[in-house]
Amino acid sequence: MKYDVVNGEIQIDKEFLTSRIQQCACIGVVGRAVAALLLISPYYQLVSQVFPGFELLGWYTVGAKALSSDLAVHRVMEFNESPLFMLLDPASKGPSTKKKLPISLFESELHMLNGVPKMIFVKAPFKIETSESEGISIDHISKIAPVGDASKSALHPYLGNVRDAVKMLDRQVDVLVRFLQAMKNGEAPMDHNLLRHISSICNQLPAMKSQHFDGAFTQEYNDALLVAYLATLTKGATNANTVIDRFTATQERHQRGTLL
Image 1 (cartoon, rainbow, N blue to C red):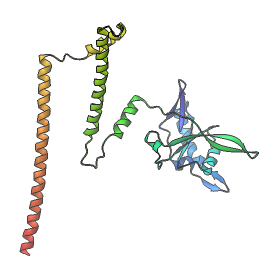
Image 2: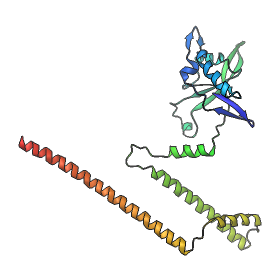
Image 3: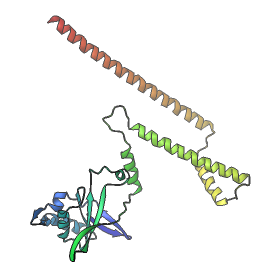
Image 4: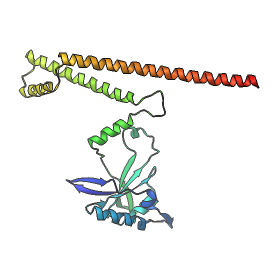
């Protein structure tokens, strides 16, 4: 992983990605690990030439827990004085994995154990931040029904999101209406700043009581009913065609059996 610091925040380079074999293809030799640094060096040098402001942040591996071989690989990382080590556990089934990613971040620290200095992994706190577009994409992907399940449709999650959004809007509008009513009755103090905000929101909404709106709404409503009716007819025709094909196939087998 490579990173750069912009406005005091660490930005990880998504293009500098290598496989686990490319990062730490190593074998154990008398308690030591020989990392394939010669394999990593060309990638690192090429990326450094294109993005000179980036530095190596650390490396990652997959497993349930950190092993001694991981610590050995961590020691020979020569691209950073204090690299980070990220551990991904794809087989984790704990309750926390429903809300958090199954990853852990470690730093190496030198501790005295029984009078002998020893390097160990220590968990480091971290926070994952996503942009608004990334969050919307992940939320949309996580709620799409499986394609193989014919009983479900990708439209169901979308309609569920629309329903939840309308319910939330209705609750918020009800709060504003009750607040305005209390302000009108003198039960709440007059807040001109809030009234201006509410007025600007109302001005953004189209006029709901107009002949043009009624005509357009009626036409759209009839179009939606027509589409639903045509979809029902198409589904019925498909089912009827399936029954006819099956009946024809059984009759052909019956006739062949009679001739034999």
